[in-house]
Length: 224
Ligand SMILES: CC(C)(COP(=O)(O)OP(=O)(O)OC[C@H]1O[C@@H](n2cnc3c(N)ncnc32)[C@H](O)[C@@H]1OP(=O)(O)O)[C@@H](O)C(=O)NCCC(=O)NCCS
Image (tube, rainbow, N blue to C red):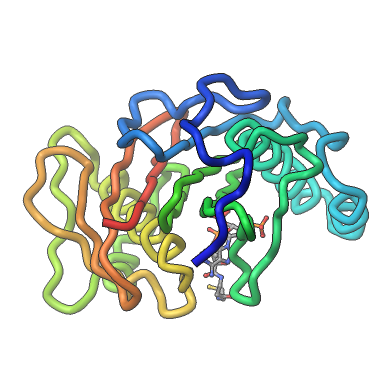
C-alpha cells in the first residue's frame, strides 16, 4: 500500500494544464481520464532524464513518448498539487508507470497522434485504438474459449473488434499484466447494449467503459 501524498488528499482539481476529458466517456468520480493531440507536446514539462531518454528514440517513439509524458505530468501535477517536473513518476519492471508515495495509480496510452492518461486511487488502465479494417481472423486471438463477441448496437463489425481489443487491453493494463499473456487472457461480460463491460483478468476484475472519438475507440478500466 502506498503512502498518501501530502498534496493528493483532496478532490481532483477540475482544470488541467494539458489534456481534455475524453468526449462522451462517463467515469465515476475519482477517476481522471484526459487526452490530448500531438500539438500539445511540451518538452519543457519533462525531466532532464526524460528529455535525454526521448533524444535516444527514433522520430515516432520520441514524439509519442514526449506527448505521453507531457500529458501525464500536466494532469498528475494538477491532481497532486505540485509542479509537473516534481511528479514522482517511476517505471516498474513490467513497463507500467507508477506514482510512488502518492496513493495514486496511473496508466498511459499513445496513438499515432494522440495520448491518453488515467489516474485514480485504485488500479486503472487506458487504451486507444484506431478503427480500421482488420483481418477477422484476429477474433480468434482476442476471444477466450467460449467467449462471445461484443454486440453494441450501431457499431460496425470492425468497430466491435477494436472495442473488444481496447476493452481487454485497458483491463489487462490496469491489472499490470499488459498483453504479455495475449488479449484472450481477459474475458468480457456479454449482453450489454452499451460499451460497458466487466472484465475478468488473471489479476482481478475490472469495470470497463469505452467511447468512439476521432476515429478511435477509447477504453478506460478500473478496479471493480
Ligand atoms: C503495455 C502494452 C499493452 C502496450 O501496448 P501498446 O498498445 O503498444 O501501447 P499503449 O500506447 O496503449 O500503452 C503504452 C504504455 O503502457 C504502459 N505500460 C507498459 N507496460 C505495461 C504493463 N505491463 N501494464 C500496464 N501498463 C503498461 C506504459 O506507460 C506505456 O507507455 P510508455 O512506454 O511511454 O511509458 C504492451 O506493450 C505489453 O503488454 N507490454 C508488456 C509485455 C510485453 O512486452 N509483451 C511483448 C509485446 S506484446
